[in-house]
Amino acid sequence: MLIAGPCSAESYEQVLETSRELAAIPGLFGLRAGIWKPRTRPGSFEGIGEQSLPWLIEAGNELGLPVAAEVAKTEHVEACLKAGVSILWIGARTTVNPIYVQELAEAMRGADVNVLVKNPIHPEINLWIGALERFEQVGIQSIGAVHRGYFSLAASPYRNEAGWELAVELRERVPEVPILCDPSHIAGKRALVPEVCQIALDLGLDGLMVEAHNNPERALSDADQQLTPKRLKEVIASLTIRDQINGNILVSNELQKLRAQIDEVDHELIQIVAKRLEIIREIANEKDKHNLAIFQLKRWMEIVETRKQAANESKLSSSMIHELFRVIHKNALEEQVRILNKRNSD
Ligand code: PEP
Ligand code: MN
Image (cartoon, rainbow, N blue to C red; front, side):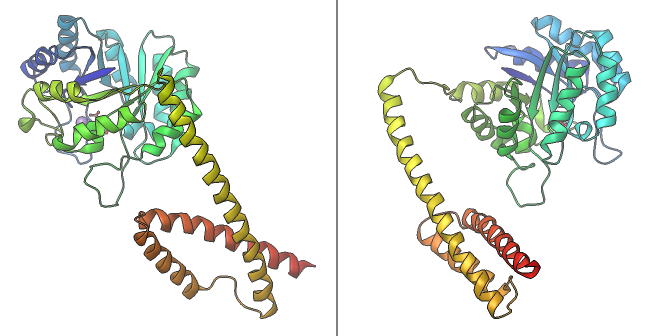
């Protein structure tokens, strides 16, 4: 499922020209445009507002497609419902606030409208699920989620941290909710949009909401990340859509064999973790005997360093191994605290 259109509706000509060019994309499901734009700093282009709604409606009518707009206030909901916008999306800056989300949901009570909820700007899955529930509670029949990545200070080529694990967890927790990906706000740069689209499809997400503009360089918002409709058409044609299930029995037999090997390796892994914990218990006894503190910074630094080196030698990601040992070490500390506490209280 593909929804495409400009970050913001800027002018009648821009909306209509963009949508006419988008019409060349086979299977295009709907058109998007931001009418009211939540901008980080005042003074940026904040959307034309209600006056631009008829442009989007006209574009949708011309193509015979549903249209989507972001709503952040009850007045936005009322204006969109009156104008005939059939997909309302909740922006990342709104999903973070349950009071706003509830107000928006109340304004839609009983309405025959589709709602898409973007993930909040920070990776808190319960806020995302909570927002989905608020729309369900007011009787919205068609609710979807949009994964748009999240704000992070970590250095990355992307504008937002992709945080795919968040979308995967949403899938686990509410499997019935379709999830679209917004590769534009994850990537932040035109050139990176295609790879983000492909990852989203590889992870089995259900569709894309992509920003496209007839003249991206001149866009009044998000100029760096918008594609021309022509380029978007090429990108969509280049994507590989993978199946969840492969009907070819030979492929699945091979996969089954490999999965059996993985089951075995995981079993060994668990046995090794258990063996390590046994040694930790003996260490706790020794520390107790010699009245030593549980946490020894020097030893922990040594573990981090040597395990990272070993990871490099085995061509494993050293940050992944660091993370793994952080979890193992945390558990080891907790076990020692438990043992010494028990000893103290005996
Ligand atoms: C948008 O879709 O243009 C937008 C503002 O997105 P987000 O809420 O994900 O930042
Ligand atoms: Mn945008």
